[in-house]
Image 1 (tube, helix red, strand yellow):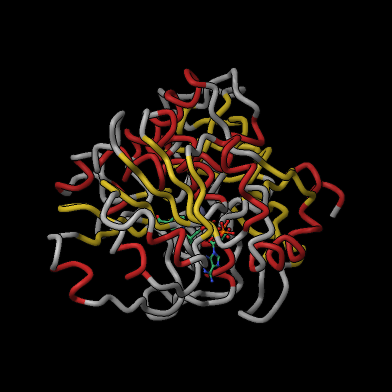
Image 2: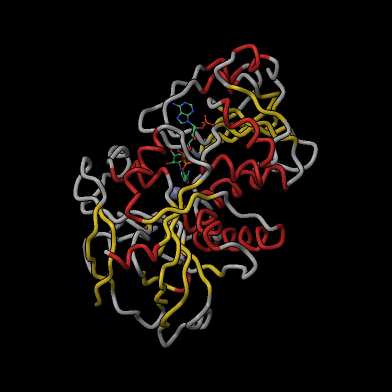
Length: 352
Ligand code: NAP
Ligand code: ZN
């Protein structure tokens, strides 16, 4: 065991503050990583404030962070995939049972024993796992991803959650050229969804509550932008979408969007608001529409997504902050004031 610097929250109402946590020494299958950048996902905020208590209540202290990029500093004796100096990444998962049908299908995120990067039982040290708002992390090589060397590293970090969480459902639902695709909410997930939908060749429409994001949405790859609070603008698109990706982090009217789907159209929820959404039966029934959900993506698909980003030069648009500004960043997230992902420069932890 060794100690590493981190930022943690002591309760649902405490700010994040400097702390020291223990990490295990690498076992034979483990990789030790010096963290360079860690993105701030809205899920970090939901978890710190225990907003998902019905699904997964938070154990304190919590060290959030699951958009991790860094360099390998040490490997266990059985590690074959990585060596010291390699540029690597870790996303939302650090372990799973490895042999259930879901794991075998490369869908580790749906394994019943999946261990998330933070706030999951830590079978090595007891207590819970601690995430990437810290100097270093030790992870089984199966859950470590390789990072293309040509990409901006701060912009890579958000690919590990915002990237794969949007890439995976767009692929699953067959988003390609000729499809009309909507993305609701232009935040961390939403802006990656726009980049991918555009890269896959779809006609891409952004729904935003923030009129001041219109120009950015077009620059990011949207063909059209709809201000979702304007009922007339919404109505113009009634019955026309093949697929809509919903990334909204707070309660909103999902029926307004279901009504924009064509026959057999689908809305996939990736946003995970604290409170349930109301679905009107007739929003679905009348055009055999469907509403579904999606959780991040498996390890093979995450690696595929990173390579796709390397080939197409896709990274997140980021605002890099020192860790000392993390509480301020959370307040700005709540005001939809993010362009379009905060990323912590972990070297700022060294001064703590
Ligand atoms: P974010 O950066 O804060 O973006 C959320 C966006 O939603 C905002 O920028 C805003 O976009 C829109 N929005 C916020 N409040 C709204 C409201 N009251 N009504 C309508 N629109 C609103 O958050 P994020 O990191 O992208 O995460 C989004 C959600 O996805 C969170 O709930 C997060 O926990 C969840 N998530 C799920 C997964 C998964 O695997 N399923 C993975 C990661 C995150 P506009 O300003 O454009 O309206
Ligand atoms: Zn996330």
